Structure formats: C-alpha cells, structure tokens
Length: 104
Image (cartoon, rainbow, N blue to C red; front, side, top):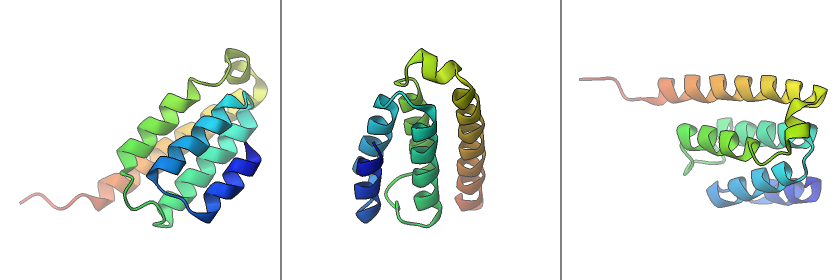
C-alpha cells in the first residue's frame, strides 16, 4: 500500500485516487488508510486533483473505509482513523462551500 501511495504521488488523478485509497483499505491497517486519506485530501487542497469534486472525494473516502476489516475499524488506530475521516469531511465540505458561486 505504501509503495502504491508513493507511485500515486508522481501522477495523481481522480482514477488513481480511488485506486490508492482502495489499496490502502485492502491493507486492513487503519494507520495506512489514514495516511492515504490525508494524502488525497492534501493533494486535493493543493489543486492537484482538479477533476475530482470535493463531494466525490468525500464519498470515495467514506466508501473505501468500509473495505477495511471490522477489526481494523474497531482498533485504537481505527478510533484515530475516525477522527482523521471527520477532519477530512469537514475540510472538504468547508472548501466545497467556499467554491460555490454566489446565488443570483
């Protein structure tokens, strides 16, 4: 998963973001998935994922979370992951709201 994340950093796009998150989730390690989420959200904030809407990234992060084994989600690291996911959700929702055009 870490090798795939490093490869992803070379050329991130919407499709490879999904793949990177999926591989991290398949690792069944909450810490690995948290790092993948932080990477994707960081790249999104840096403008390196222009074709990926905030709402789509949020949905992707949430859906891949459920790929993690129940044991990983219930562990101490899983608790920290839930905090990471909540932070990512807030950041993406806040950024998406700021990017909406004003109503006429």
